[in-house]
Image (cartoon, rainbow, N blue to C red):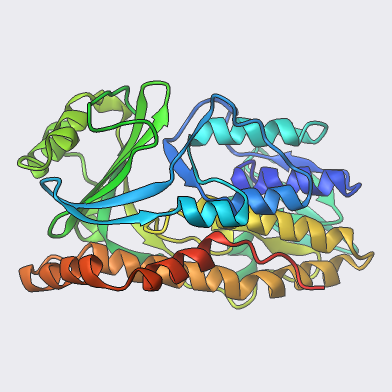
Length: 379
């Protein structure tokens, strides 16, 4: 397993339960608190439950039952009620720090060998085995290689060659500061929409919140942006008080800045005993909040497919065939919603607000139900 992220650890835990000897190689120098936070939607928890993986989220995550959409000044547009769908599928929707989720999954992969500081650079088929080469000169052989090494995956590059990412046209800032506000109650989750700008604010428990902010910007500019906290605060001057105060409460050095990107969708995820999962296979923009959940679904289905056959290559192709259309649908939906959320022209943003205010509830419920329901593996 190349990569000890969310999808990689899920697959490692599932494969270990199926009797595989799993080795995980992670390029980071240590599995320590890093990154920001994310939403862990009910489809991910359903998927984990199907193979008996029950991470301990006690004290690590907060349940949210609804998502508020608001104007930049905090006026209501619409509320999406996820709690009803969560009750139907039997799993909640959670907000959790990425490091806490990684630790919870690492506990489930107990017994798997995990090496850090191991940066994969490529792979080569050697007879019935695969050799993975590492930056420090090491070479490791395995019967199966799973590329779970994220957006800049070396395993993907070895399969399809060099690629240019798809630029979504905006920058994204993220942070998880300590912050309390009367409006930010337990389980609070809200998106504030402006013109070419957004702000997300989510309670993640323990007196902490997760916030992210966007601004339309060419990718070349976003990649070298160094404006700092003061520039972000100026961009969101005049927004709702809790938005401005969240930015103010955030230590400048804890704000992460990235250009929002995805990649061309692959029709082929692997060959022979090699495959991809998660962001290595199908990176997506963050608008639907499903990146972590779809990576977990990948890991679960991969483990199920390999556990049900002695034909490793056949099991990997079955996994890819089961996952391709589900992943494609979420990638495309995320990309489409991203374009709508980043609209900038006044007439288009007015149309967006009116649509979200007055569209029938069943329209959104059907879309949310499809996303929040784990489809499993067909017989």
